[in-house]
Image (cartoon, rainbow over the protein chains, first blue to last red):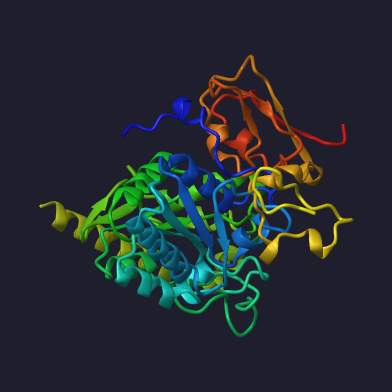
Length: 310
Length: 107
């Protein structure tokens, strides 16, 4: 299952330019890589969010695959409904194609608003892949904090001032929540690691039953980074162990990438304007707390993957 | 009258009325966003230099706007300036210096 860009680039990806995502956005890169990796025909659904709003402005659609529009909270329910209808039609002999169903959602539509419908769809065991592109806030409506926003990040609903130094509290560990559903495949990746991402998409599409991918996406506007550093910042997220690349296959954890030298978290925080205030002397304790949380999570993952490989 | 059939469907024009729009506002032929030009968003323009390019296709895999043009063999042949928003990811991720250069649009 080697993935070769020279072979891959011969394929037309069913996702066109002319969509209205911001310059340098990570989400369309993820969609392109997902659709490039898929060998089967795809039918997709997108939860309300930047991706849904900006790629399907009427009367245009950037999607060359069938796409269904739906609300913020229910993309997992919508796609599981389509999958059930497809199964019924197939049993009746009305459809003979092998179609795979993919739901896309941002962190707002996945971590917060759509969590119940996602949990339900995973529990019911539909043959679908749910892909969360996590950029760590509600970027579409003006950078409000979500439960994926890291501690201390400045957003429009956690503004830095006299009262609070950015978002209070740590982010939710959604990948582990999904792993706790005991579904066949859960993984975490970024589009900067395109080979890793495409391998995971292929695995997720191949399993019978539900699969979940949590993909870190950059947002030049909300993270306050230059447009052209979208990919390099994601690479730093992995090298600082903020966003470990790992997968949980049938309940067993496996680490896919261990940086040779674990970089300090400040390497990832410093280029981002939303964390600028953390480098003031009075906020040093927040930096330390963030680093400690990343270390805790990383050590735990190492233990789990070591335990599962033995 | 705009047909609901995929083949003959055309993107509605501003002069069309509600009667011309398919039921439920469906877009029968997806992928028509390519008819919409986003090249005007650009502040910096990528200049592709085929002599230096090593055909690694990293720009192709990282472009958010599907604006890296390839030929039938999948080889990079240039940028689609109708849709490129000038983010510069291609130039930043290119392993070969000078193969893609970003220049200001006001030259």
